[in-house]
Image 1 (tube, rainbow over the protein chains, first blue to last red):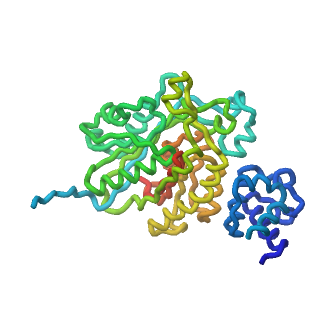
Image 2: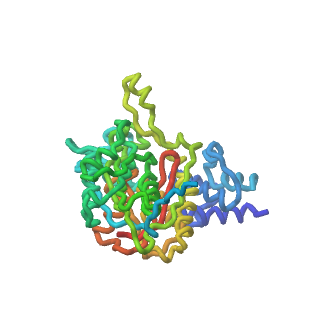
Image 3: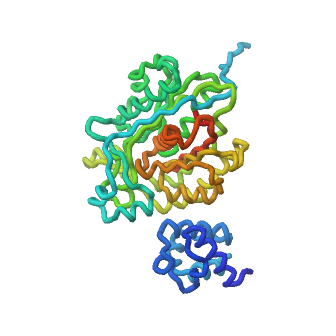
Length: 80
Length: 331
């Protein structure tokens, strides 16, 4: 079972790859849209990337609730 | 016991030539944002589109298709009478019967040619190319004219801020003929009708006529983007595998010009080498559906960015949902 920090770190790499956000900035309290400037299309890619990377399924209605990095990490922890 | 003769075709097929035609009306993003709450910057960031081409007065789906077809026939060094089949892919021929293909064949001077329309939206050119390759190899036709032509401006809701700036007009054509060596790889294609609602005509003709409205194209951008950046990415990789190639063997990548952001994601997934030339005609032409792949090929060839004999990966995907892709040798 991956730790919260391991999931955050892998997610940070994904966000960096998709949206070019420096990995250090991808911290749990950061909002994807407001703080990291991730737009809706990049967010779709991050969701798809999470599904592949962490082996979870993130339905559209759930993905809309993933506002912060912490929300995404918590979802992955609960469902992987 | 009677014995039926079977047709005998060419061992291989290839694209002999490409042609294209664009309408003359150029509309920039500033024009489009008169009708929607959006901006030039937002449109460019989300799609890569700076301007698009729409029909001007006097231009029609038919005139564009004919111009592209004539160029392809001439560049192949053929006469129209040498071409014995015509496949037109379009979703913007509003006269359902008869199909437009027989009329085009007649106007081009083709004689008694097999001619029919297909409807496979933005995958239409690659769908028709697969059919053309099969017809030539099966011996059902010797030279096939494949046309992708669209006038999506006529199906655009100027006030829909999700689509108004995307769709455009244009036509592209190719002649597919016999070859001693293979120039068209195996097609990778399919459909997912469970996602019919991802891109759709807002009303069927019967109800549109009944209430006196004119339908437009609607799109669930999020669903399409998700499909294109996940399922289509893997399908595109399969086109290479089926052709027995690796990314290093590739010179040119021509994805359907749906959205530059989709192209960016496909590139990240495919890990194509730097040397591979990537079609980005959407920037100046918008998304012209079935016409986008042949127009992009023609643009790369005529600008010298791509060269005859190079290996190009094509992938089309769109309303249906449908997709088709193959690796080809450029003419």
